[in-house]
Image (cartoon, rainbow, N blue to C red; front, side):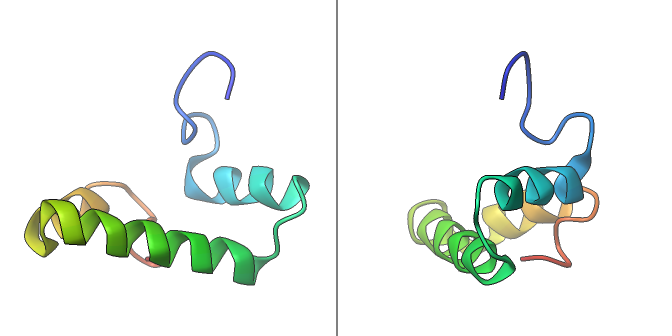
Length: 63
């Protein structure tokens, strides 16, 4: 996004809305999230990735 964090000014829901505005379905977004998290866990480890996910308000319910 322009001028800052993707999650700024709308949180996880705002980011999801941006992705849907670009044509992704909720299923596409869930698949993308799952693949991204799996990749991160493979390279950084479950514990670290879970810690990061839990530090972002609202994100664990989507992960």
